[in-house]
Structure formats: C-alpha cells, structure tokens
Amino acid sequence: MRTEPAGVADMAPLPLGKPPLELLDRLLRAWEVRDPRVVVGPRLGEDAAILDLGDRYLVAKSDPITFTAEEIGWYAVQVNANDLAVRGARPCWFLMTLLLPEAKTDGTLVERIFAQVHEACQAVGATVVGGHTEITAGLDRPILAGTMLGEVDKARLVTTAGARPGDAILLSKGIAVEGVSVLAREGRERLAAVPAEVVARSREFLRHPGISVLPEVKIALESVPVHSMHDPTEGGLATGLLELAMAGGIGLEVDEEAIPVLPECLALCRALGLDPLGLIASGSLLLTCPAECAETLLSAWRREGIGGRAIGRVLPAGAGCWLMQRQGRRPLPRFARDEVARLFER
Image (cartoon, rainbow, N blue to C red; front, top):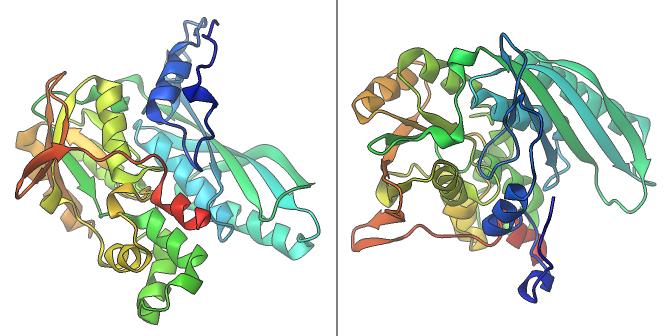
C-alpha cells in the first residue's frame, strides 16, 4: 500500500465521530485486497465485509458503542446484527471486546452487560463465540466493540452499491430511533423543557420501537426485488443517503416532507438545537427497490405494524444528491459530525 504525505489540511484536528467521507474513501481505496475470496472488502458505505466460502458467503461486521454506556450489551449486538441483515444475511456468531473503566467497575456491572449481550443474541438468533474483557485505564465509561459473523445464500446477497436509477428510496419506521435513545439517556439535564413522559418514552427507543431492522428486512426480501439496503448510523439519514449514493455511483433526490421524523425526535432536537437529518439513525432501514414495487412493500410492512415511507428516488450517475423542498431543491446537507457528538462537545 502506498499513501501520499499528509497535506496541511490533513493536519487539522478532526471533530468527534466518523471522519469525513472523502478522507475515508481515499484511505480505503488505497488498500489492496489480494485474497480473491474477498467479494466486498473495506468500501465507503458498505455495511459489512463479504467473503466467498464456496457454497455461500460469510458476512462480517465490527462496530463499537461509544456514545452511551447504558444497555451497551443489547445495543452492540443489535447494531452489528443490522449490518448483516442489510446484506440479506442471518446473524450467527458474535464476539465482543469489552473495555471497562478503572475504579468504576464491579462484578455487578460486568454481569449486567454480559446478561444484555446474552439476551440480545437470543433475540437475533446469534451465539456468543468469544472476545475479550478487561479493566482499562483512561476510560470514564464502558466501551463495547462487537463483531458479528453470519451467512447468506449467494442468490440472496444485497449490497449498498446495488441501487439503480429509477428505484424508489424507502425508509422504515422513521428517524432517528438510535439518536433519540442516546439523547434521552445522555442529555437528560438539558431536556427540562421536554415533558417527562416524552423523555421516558425516548429512553426506551432501543427496544420500543426497537433498534433492530431484522423484521423489516425479512419482509422486504420476501415481498419485492430489493436492489440495495443500508443501515444509516453516524451522521444520520443525510449521511446514510450520501453513502448509498457514493457506494453505488448514483445520484438521488429526497422529498423533505416525506421523511418520517418521529415526534420524540422533533421534541428532543428542538430542545437541544439539533438537526434530525444528522442524528445517528440506526433502527431505520434505508432501502431501494423498483418504483412499481414500493407500495407493495410498504403495505407488507404496515400489515406487520411497521411504519415506512417512500422518501425519494434514485437518479443516474452525475445527477447529484438533492433535498426537495417546497421552495425548490438544495444539495443534500452534509454533517461534519453526528449531531449527538455536538451534545458531547458542549
């Protein structure tokens, strides 16, 4: 691998959260993948690696939980399982690296996190197969980095890069399930103006409506031809859409009024001065399918109590990424860091 020397701009401190998309894209493209069994390696916007095992694909994903310390066992399993689900894969095996803060950890804390992991693995059908646990200096909260492995039949594989011009863009549930839970748990002292029942309901968003997208993925794969799926995480829906466009080399336009913003998300974001479009958004499935199939899928979701909306369409390469508003269109907004990170910087 050969990389160019860092320029002056590269020396500037980066904000909390995911590095800029262009920087990640440049670094990932510099890596040479030499093993021919790697079907999808490190690429911008792709949710998980894909390895060819001959009769099937092995799908692998690693993701940490850093924004909150509450229910991190449940949280880590679910977000990693989501990244396999959007490949069409079944989560099978989970490994965790659990780092615990010095002088703040007792046996009860460790047992509680292990119980959360066990419960979540049962919920997604996975088995814990290993990992590492230690008390670590320099931490003020537990950090759990999870790795999920799973399998998918070759004919059922879906990628982020599969979106086609003319596809409808669908979003399940609404935004931002993950972000609302984190804000309610970590920003409590700044939410005095929000009714207590709204904050309490928001704290439970990891489980109700739930951060898992496995149910809507299963329904989608059984109902319509799915061209691409993506789990929008850091940087929110806006960044997830940009990642989808960059992965597939396509453009897109999104109707701002069609985006389902959950009422709790609106209440918390208004109180904290945050933009829902840039709020970490796992728990909502981003999907593209033929436009004529969109209503079939939305109806199938509704029959199972899952909300969703068609929020836009895929455009040809070079057409750009646009947010459609009443007064016209503007470029899809970009967020230098997730809106949750702004909470931590204040």
